[in-house]
Length: 339
Image 1: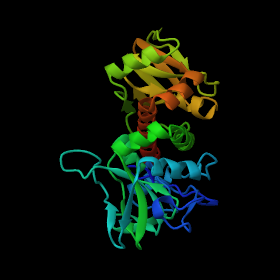
Image 2: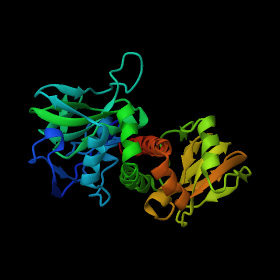
Image 3: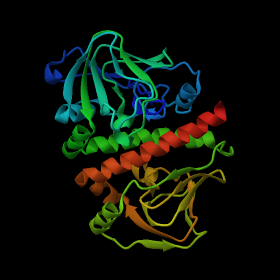
């Protein structure tokens, strides 16, 4: 599910035969990529039937087939640090509303299905399936979001799994996976922003921040070619929708308002990031940003951005979390407008 809390569902088409059988898996397993209705997470699977609000949130993220997914890279990523698991028919892999962390949690995992078929359920009703080659459950690992759906093995299944520690280990070995995942997530973000359009949000603007703590902010500054934070007085426009994006920004101090169609949809505080979409897909800005209070921001150009993702997996993981949380929040706003 590249998954959030109505877990995002991706299925990738066309089909790509595996060059080799992973960890003993059958060569018949194939990677495919066909994006379908998604929940607030990135999820790879088939078309959901829109019903309760959880499915409405999924419908808010309907996507077109993504040109960004690289099946061979996904397989290499999971094989680099993952564990092989067999799931018998009828066994839940994870359950709706299951929390990703905490004293009584099982520890979240994300999965690549090699063999079999997984059914996705909300309130005990099936709304989609996961086929071989699909990645699902990732947002619980990336962003710590609770499960928005139950994943049940419909027949005997074999998966590669990654817990949070293994995910970070895999990013160390295959940081390009982070760029691929960002591209897919940004595609979904842009779709949510288009759906918001000029509509007035039904809920209060989402609050984002603390993706990077003070220590991480200091370390990031030391790694940049231009480490000085730029100052923006309250009311100053930082970026405008439709403009070419040369930088992404990290908030060192203050609060930034993100607007779509003249309405504030998000507020980004200290440790939060914004503006990364234009660096990931090199498209025009999808939203505007202005300083809501006096701010200090780190500006990161695309060269530094790519180098940081490739050489500093922790930065890539933090950016993935920021994008995933934003995707989840905007999908909820879209769902409220449509429900």
